[in-house]
Image 1 (cartoon, protein in one colour):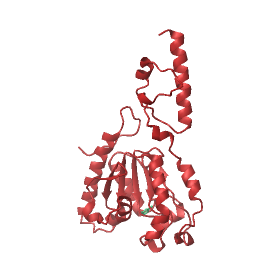
Image 2: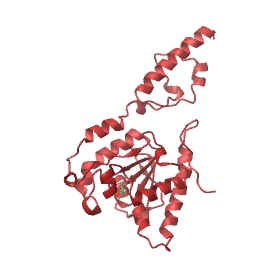
Image 3: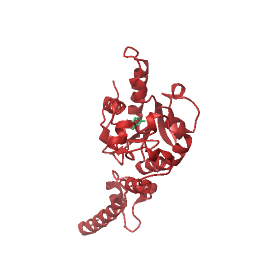
Image 4: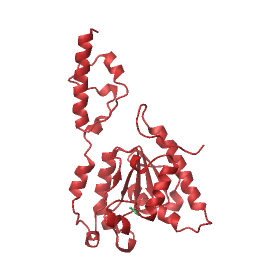
Length: 259
Ligand code: URA
């Protein structure tokens, strides 16, 4: 191919990719190259590290979902809450943690998992070599249940569409469900966390690991390490799966399971 021809194809390809990037597409698989561009096999080969699914183009943004949620009054939890607690982290996270609902600290600060359980969750994330900024953290309900009671079915039903949209927008490769509420809600199961933890499940095709909630670990006697060890085991499995699910060339941080 002539130098000018190559330059013009490459400029057109860059422009088309920039267009897609503005539409939220980060990866373009070779087979889904923009149709408006005459892409030769040489250019296709050089585009290999850039990959995408057509579904990505249709993804909505977290900002859009947050804006739809607004100052939510869809259930009675709004009456006593201070802040809506939407979610925090990398909007393109490959790993997503889902808890139950905000506690007092989260209600005050408007961010999930910032209290004692949150500090333990941060350590759990760091134990597999990642940081909070690498992952995305959200809850089933976005307003604090009074006195940290479990959210009621109609409260979960009002909030669930927003969590489902968050998951679809982020497109994680692996989800970790923390405790009974997210596990029963997302997997539509009645199995309790003690029986299901540590066993891979699937949420809409995404590998889903149920494990204990950090608050449960904090309630264990110091000398009873059983639940902590079980969460450690579950997170080792998550780290391995997370690394396996990273597409070739993906820039996301690698997890570090213990050797
Ligand atoms: N517990 C949860 O389930 N979520 C939080 O954000 C904090 C504590």
